[in-house]
Length: 233
Image 1 (spheres, one colour):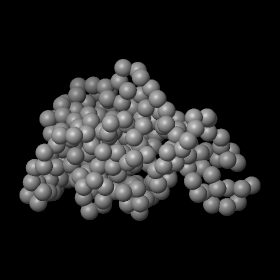
Image 2: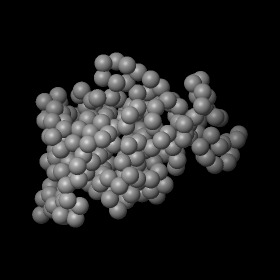
Image 3: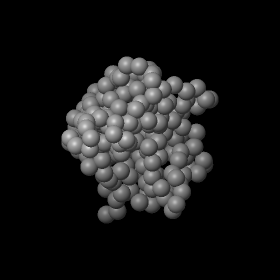
Image 4: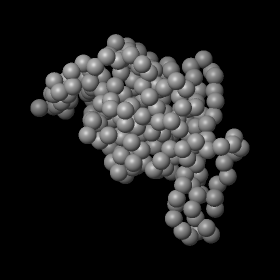
């Protein structure tokens, strides 16, 4: 049985267990992300997340902790312990780490049961293909979070016409003192750019928890250390 057929079978089992719940209101976010995505995640919309698996998992945690089925496609390095600490319900999360050439079919099948899908496309995505995927998810009222930190064939994978792009524009860790100690806390600035050009920035603590950080000043690196993403396994 192919991977795509297995996903179809799994989606059918989830539908049989859960039925078809109405999908009306926006998907909730964690309280700390209220300023990052004001009003919650619109159903049927596409959000692009650049440069941060941790931020994508934090967006997943809101709907997941509220009881939604969610899916992660094309991301093999999600740390289960860190995701669970943020509120992701692993028992209601479908992982498809390597969808291969069938990724479009896999996303479409999962859209029937998952209210939010995190996707890292395995190949560059053209406008026509992106619009076909987005149109199907709009009909299903399933929200797509596209992680665009990957590279395929030397080309940065992006997603055309996303409703908003969220990007970690500054990121530092605290905890080292003179080169000694342990990394304890990561502070980031998230830049949200809404389609049409409106932009705002939000400062957060983003490691094993997500919390707002007061103030709008620039972040200062501790001991010159810039962060790599904190939620990979």
